[in-house]
Length: 271
Ligand code: NAP
Image (cartoon, rainbow, N blue to C red; front, side, top):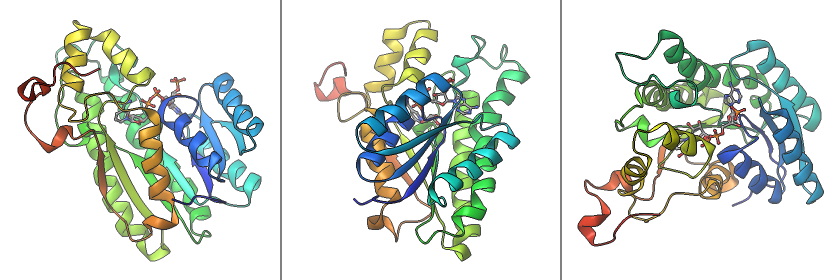
């Protein structure tokens, strides 16, 4: 898996899966532009990567703000002479911004906010990275889907719809950008231990029951770690994946491979 010298832009990369990807890519020789809303964490992560001998800068960017997205892409291209990889990672779940999660109670504002970050953000970042990606000879866009792109979950109405749309946007962009030799892929994680999952669990009426629901279907009986997903993102960016395009790649511990929970297999509660 080689990402040596590739120039990455990663959105929502101050924490969680984006941060894990920034660290792994940089430790394998990539030049990484970390962007996020959380400047303190983002600057600290870029400094940590540089201290370890890697190349990274931080640039503030709200993916829903067209001007900030344009600035991000131009700052990234100026810093490293272009962009090869756009990792559309930024995402939110409705439980992070509201406690009203049912169809009866969710407001239009909450629903539209999730659409704006998770779907419109992917559109805007792809649009404004495109001029630079066209100049790269190893360009790809890698989108964060979810198992909720494919299956329904409780209290996931806005999130699940946007992740389903990101999966379909991936396929459409793979088609439209093929003439420019830009690959577009999407990966769909199961439950990965990040602040997003912690906040989702906190919002649940019975956090332990919700944790069981989320992990009792993983055939690998644990939550994923950000590094598990980072390995896949780096592979999808790498020289080794050049014939992979328009895919929806599950990284879910096997949860969508079957219908059942671990107790049927005598494996007990997942950790
Ligand atoms: P996370 O820990 O919450 O990290 C997401 C980052 O995105 C945060 O730093 C957040 O900043 C930032 N962000 C939020 N809104 C933004 C915006 N408008 N513009 C730019 N950045 C923004 O989440 P994660 O679990 O690593 O998830 C990363 C991606 O993977 C998301 O797209 C998520 O849907 C997807 N995913 C995660 C899981 C999972 O189990 N964790 C499963 C499937 C898919 P603030 O903290 O300042 O808001």
